[in-house]
Image (cartoon, rainbow, N blue to C red; front, side, top):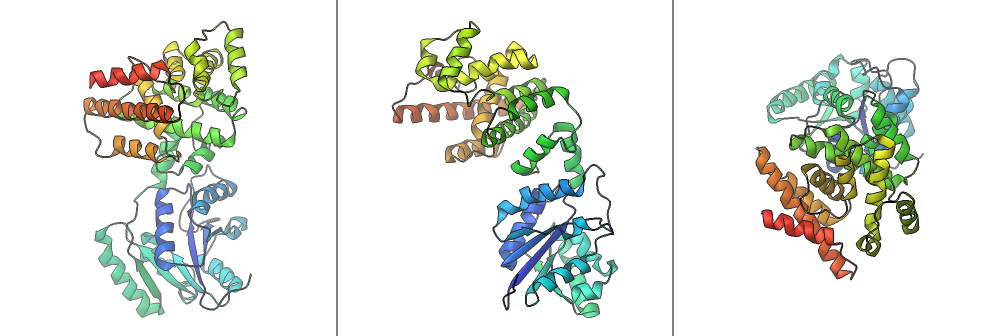
Length: 406
């Protein structure tokens, strides 16, 4: 690879165990303020200054880094060099390898605040600092004075060039994220793609036989896009359920995993299955066949997972809604509509409507939930009317019921 004169190359390293939204935020600020033409994200091999969690292999951290960082910018590349080494990874060696690859480039090395403040204790600090502009971003305002003092000391002792980035950091603990994943199977501090990969591999998570069985069933039957959506709905259900103090969250999470279990069946397959099982097939369902997957998936959730009729009913009405929806049914309905990977602007608007300035009390949060479920139903009704498609009576009845209850 040839280097251009005055080309800027960024180096953004870390254990990434796992790579979380704090790392993603820092990388985004680094790219925006430094404007490198190319930026290497470097998962450390054997870090000399910190221990890894012990549950991850280098291949795990590599795959998570790809999912976290490559979508941020087409300028990002993943540097695998340190992961292939059997000895501790020293930054000065990595920098020299990248400098050799780009001999005429200007190198910018991003480090965290703790690393910045102790960089003179690293191996060969003079060799390292002679080749890079050292970049750092304060986690909070109280660190600014310490960073400025260190900047002056590094310049005086090593002739170091440093750059204090102005962006605002997200303060997230990797240890806390791993603990959260072990308890919940996911973390809101991770991007959807990282959460999905962790769900597929079971990394960090405590074993859950029921969830594993559900994942095996749906993964074999859904496209990658639908599987990604399904996992995002499960995460959304978990967050909403905790915010609304739901007592039996495990069953509803399993219902979320199964809500689109049969989404990719044809209309004919749904009809044949319902007839074979002797299940109701009302004319309004036939007129709106998009709802059929809720009925067939609900049946299979009971048969294959042993879900309760209450949880199965949440699956059955997750597309239509209905009169007198339970809290669980509303949570699954809204989670399906607003999960974080949705591309539609209305989904984003209603997501913000729920989460922004969320009331502190449970009663206020349930009221907010009702408002958002109604907004989602009204959007569906408006869209169906505009497209001149049949409107399922359950949706009409559900919207009227929510309006009546205020």
